[in-house]
Image (cartoon, rainbow, N blue to C red; front, top):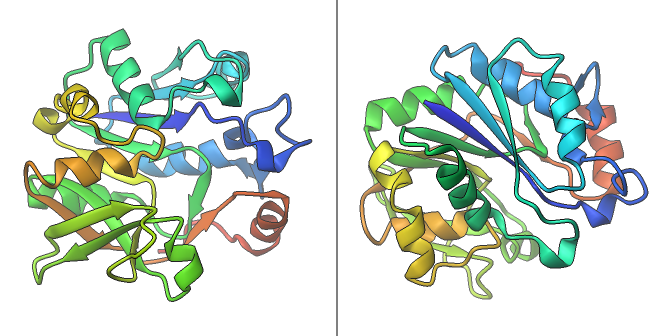
Length: 245
């Protein structure tokens, strides 16, 4: 299995910290955000290569970070140099698939979140389902729902409907940017783009995919910390205690 790490954003809301430095390499406690994610995922023994998808402005920072790691990690530079010219998450995924000729099951994750639970739970769940999967958590705040991917699920966790940043979300089940694609579904990303799925938010591909094939949504066993601005970064640094579940 490959693990694709989405790290091509410009994190403009975290300036000046990220004006010349990528958000996924910011420190949270004794590790960087990426170290928390990769070191945890690696304990599952399921991933044989990590692919960090970067923009041109920050690629050299990730290449330097790779030299500190024992895992097999490839950095893919999508060639963009500004927030205005970014490809968007779904096109970045397809760019990496084509650039590296990837044909495998894939764990696709945002490189700017930390979790207090192990992603090995999600990998195990996806393997048991034998289908593409997402995670979900209950979001009580109506305003926050407007900025999320939202799913409706049946009693077996199968997604009946998913929308991205809908003005009228139908449920309170939000989907964070952590996805599992089967090999077959990873091969459909190009078709999804050509069919008109959104390309900026990574969940837009899943919203299209669940209209084509079964996709399941695991309820998260813990908390996700989203680092979106300076205030949330300071909060995470003060509250995060690592992976405890």
